[in-house]
Image 1 (cartoon, rainbow over the protein chains, first blue to last red):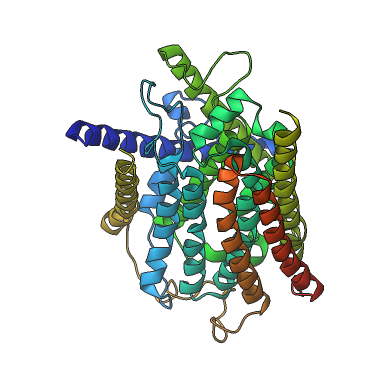
Image 2 (cartoon, one colour):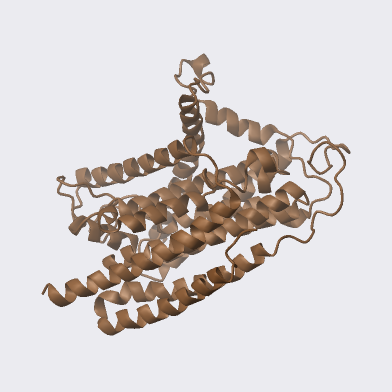
Length: 350
Length: 119
């Protein structure tokens, strides 16, 4: 490994971190705007108007400054080390998932590898493993706060996260079986040569996307927070930047989950009739691929936000029933059916 | 070359740790600090909090956690099988169907026993 490779990778990491954080800041604005339109309001429209900027473009800056300048209240009864560790875990686990996510074309003959660690061939397993660590942040926050709301929120949340992790992991197995790889670039390449995952694995897609909502604690699965009953759930006792870090972690998870959805089921950088292949490099093709993948990711994120303002929250027993009595059996059936069909095709087609 | 990629993952981990520490340090430096007795109280309904927080909670949470461990370990076994399936024959399919049938029987048993009922 030469020094240049190292410098290049550090620049890449800093760029990706910067871009994702900036995106998160603006996603919060986008979410507020969508909320406003869904409820027939105008939403934030002031920050930035002083400088002639439209549509509250400086709102994220104001939000960030507010997080930094507020007093960071640490209540007297908390278990302090764990209390401080929890938001920290939430944000670190959300960030390191990006190591294997391809933001564009990756390969030996491409201009740049749009991925931090391009040759980690267990990519998807790594993302799922890292994503499941987020439950520690939640349960530690709930436990260390020494607050009944936070405690109940933390318990509910961890039970929900572990329950939906199973369908999340099982629903992608059918797609992995077809693509024959855990490397996300291979999965995209397979889709560009055959068909999009959503077409060949419709049930897998529905199960994955639904559990993705639960894993990111979004409505209709936001029982850990449920403002009306538990105040704020596991982050009731957090204020200022520590609260902001939970928030940041949640939005980073949304971005990761949208990337995985796009990569596994929406064909990644592939669009029909454009003639893009895994090998095509060139400047225009590279830009096209990056543009298509980010465009699809934004569509997925907008869809997730749209759902939030459309559906009401589940009751807790309904939530658990959905995971254990419908989604897990369906995911198993999906896997067996996929394997069976692949076997039939292999035996009788050729 | 492949091993270096885990170095990159490690670098990202270090960046993430630094990134998560920076705002905490910044807050400690610039945020105002005014301690008061009321602020240090547990945030509940406005009245003094009653009793212990860390009480016994319902058994269902434990049961679901145990079920989760069983199924999560199973899923880990399914990954290599799914990825290698292209190179395996009918035997692999039969083997995995037997494996899944055993686990489904476990789920069905738990279901019949009423473990999955949230009361």
